[in-house]
Image 1 (cartoon, helix red, strand yellow):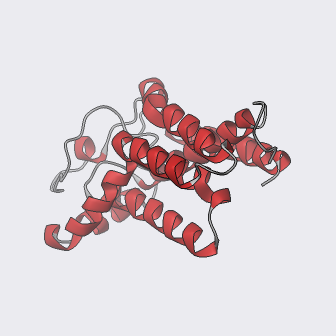
Image 2 (tube, rainbow, N blue to C red; image 1 turned 135 degrees about the vertical axis):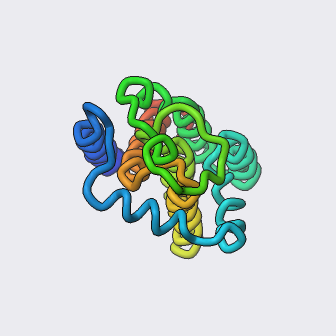
Length: 203
């Protein structure tokens, strides 16, 4: 992708993130339709959701570190831009969501809804989803390095991570949108930064 496209993605995704923040500003309560979606996905039996909860771990920082190591090994004889961009994206994704959460303080579904099953250790606030941020940052950062099939796989995995966060009662649907927007923004920023480094290809 060209630097112009990365810049456009950065601006667009930040606008989406900011729009979501405006929607949850105030008491941070659920938006129309969010309760129904959370209850429907939370109602999926625990046994059925188990494999998806395993995939959900791809949205954690250890998964990001492993992804950097794998891509660095795979790209060792090629342009170093890819592994560097991924490393920057993962570093930015770690805890960046918490900075925004601390400002907006949107309650999680588990703190608002009665009768739902909490299937993950949950603390802090909801918007944006940190797991989604990390998973999408990884997918967006490696996107230029993959063929069509590889891109479909990484984006499908990122989508599973996001949806499963609703299943475990950790997030509202808008939190996933915000997390995805933040992840794309961080990956775009990483690629733009890499383009300024000597010895890397300009994309």
